[in-house]
Length: 420
Image (cartoon, rainbow, N blue to C red; front, side, top):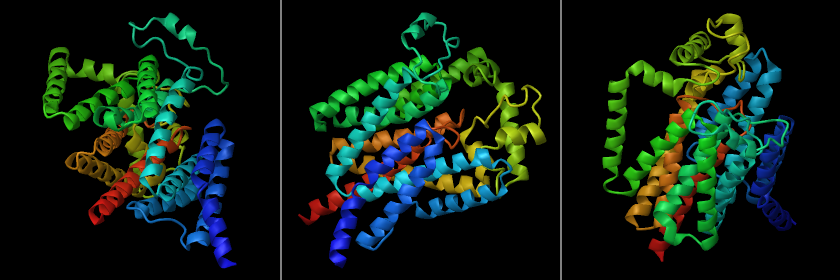
């Protein structure tokens, strides 16, 4: 009887990733459905315990994740705006549940390839969805005719901000590009076709969003990707640094910073510095607990009023690292940074082992995953749209799950090859 229960539990647990993914996507549509992903995820953990005697496989970032979970309990306790904080906590928890669903399901190279294919499809689907969901900004880049946006009518009631869409899409881009640059010969025809379609679609949407942060992150990771792919890649990196330095010297520091940092919400560097300073004040005054997830706007208006903006105008810190510290305190930021460092090291290891073993598929996957973290950091310096306040925030956790499981499967594959 026990064996029958375990087999049934194992079969049910094998469905976890699909059901959790659907629940998380449902949370994109309505924040009211986020709690469903948490309940379903908890049920699958119990099912896995019945089948294998463990709640989950262990991963290198379990302890930082535990600290994040502790900080979410604290933020629920300290928040003065539970109606704002609870959905953001649910979004963070759903991302963590998605992460564990990925690492528990991906137990073979075949499943890893299927997961990577799903990542490509996710990037392509998000780019196609952007054509009918983004509230376009048409005044930033004069070389893009405003009439072009007439071909993309909005078909949803809850529209997406172009900066949010750019920040989400640009994370997928390096993963797909890395597979094409390093492992083209290892891709099946359908993988190659979908990859090229996704690259073209994402590139077009990134330009149409006119998101400076997204495009800067794109340039940054392309330079790093060139450095990883070609021996002479360092030449492009030096050229990029030299060109940037020359532009700053010719135009001036302030005009360049205004051009890079300005947005329809914040204006130039003065406005952004004021927004960042309010985040710093909150961190100084609430270093251990934060002010509660999602509470930046209200706390800033009440305790640290803006001089350049009307109340309610600025919703978040416009910096990923400051936003996390504002929401969950310095311990929460340390936990998040620990995860970032660990997964970045794992991505590098996947790339390095792929290179030395002449496995282009793993080298490309590792390079792409590493560059996705470059994107996360560079874009995070200018915005915080990959954190809890936006619907696609769990995407980061999905990528982290892909990184951790890639390292594990690559190690297992190499071990089997040596033993064989």
